[in-house]
Length: 305
Ligand code: GDP
Image (cartoon, rainbow, N blue to C red):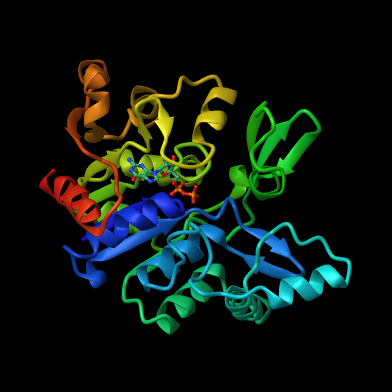
C-alpha cells in the first residue's frame, strides 16, 4: 500500500508515472484543499480535480490546467453579464463543479463528493481531500490578505509575498482515512509539489505531521526545487517571502522531522552532504519529468527506496 501527499500539476505528473508501476487499488492520494474556492456559488477544488483529470487522461497537459479540448462559452456569457471571470472555468470543468456542489448541498462530504467524481471518471485510485472542513490558503500582500487563487491567477503571482496564512487550519480535522492511510502504508510519497501551499497545507492539518513521524512506512519526498528554482509556479516567491532560501536543502529542512529519503536532482548533487546532515538519506537522479518515460523512471527510483 502506497499513500501520496499531492498538490496539483507537479504531483499529477509524477503520479501518472507511478501508476504505470503500481496498481491503482494500491494507491491512496491525499490532496490539498487549501486552494479550494467558491465561484458563482460553486465549490471548486483545483488540486483534487487536476489530479483526477490527469490520472483519467483528461487533463490539458500543455496548458497545465483544465480539461483537454474544453470550451469557455459559459465563461464568455458570464462576462457579458458583467461578472468577474478571472478564474478560468471551462464548460466541461464547470460540470464537475456543478456535480460536486450539488452533492455538498445534499449533505454529502467533500470526501464523498470526490469519491463520486473519481468513480464517474473510471478511477480506481483513492483520492482523499486532506480535510472536509473549511480551510483556505491566503497570501499576505501589500494590499492585505487575498485568497491563494486571487494571488496566483487574478494577480498572476506578481505581488511580493509578505506572508501565508491557513485560515481554518487550527480547527480543521483530517478527512476520514487520511491518518489511517499514512499509518497503514508501506511507503508514503511526498510528491514534487509546492512545499508551502500544497504539501505545507496538508502537513498543517491536525494529526498528519504526527502520523508521518509515527508510521512504520518509509517516507520519501521528491524535491520540487531544481537548481535553485521551481520548474513551474510560485514556490520560489512563496519560499523567499517566508524567509526560506530557494533550494532542495530548504525543502529538506521543512520535511526533516519525518523524512527518511529525499530525492533531489542531479543538478543539486552539491547539496547532498548538507541535506544528509539533517538525518535523511539522499538520492540524486534526473527529476525533470518531460516525457512519460521520465515520469516512470522517477517513480522507479522512488519505489527502489
Ligand atoms: P500546483 O498546485 O499545480 O502548482 O502543483 P504542485 O504543488 O503539485 O506542484 C508545483 C511544484 O511542482 C513546483 O514547485 C514545481 O517546481 C514542481 N514540479 C513540476 N514539474 C516538475 C518536474 O518535472 N520535476 C520536479 N522535480 N518538480 C516539478
